[in-house]
Length: 225
Image 1 (cartoon, helix red, strand yellow):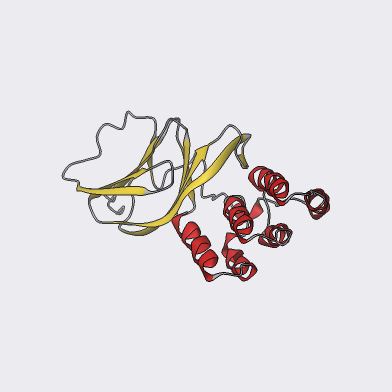
Image 2: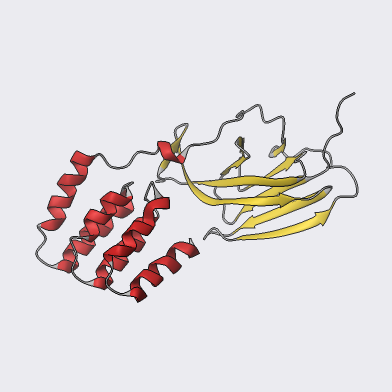
């Protein structure tokens, strides 16, 4: 006899009008707008990632650009509807309601069964595959920044580079070492964080700062992200 379907479901909605892609436990679901509903989600803890479409984004996915805006675990209880509303800065407001009846008529095209996401299959976008700037190109960029006479001009050039390119923590470290002023180091470290491919290593940059206050400020900035 077939197992009974779970009566739990999850709705994800992102602020704004951008299309989203959702990855739940490694299963990918697409949406034609900023929201999606996934039915038959089992009770328990699930890994949730939400991507937003960008015209000039950093990730290329099937010819379209996306950025990761939310990455966390969520707990789904039995016979509940979990509504997750994500703001533009990636903060989530989660509301739980009890389900007494069924799921409705399912006419919304952005409704999927958790175990029937055949359009995408059990595939998760692997951020680690996003390559950083090649070393040869990076060395050329680094040399150009180093030749700037004024530190303010160095910062302007470096900021443009970190905003437009994917970098490793080691590359960010080399850029920061070009600066003498603590405030400029801190500003660049903040700007570079978003596009760094190995964020888990970002703590290595703390040793580049002379003052504990700078280290704490960078730590707070990263925690807020």
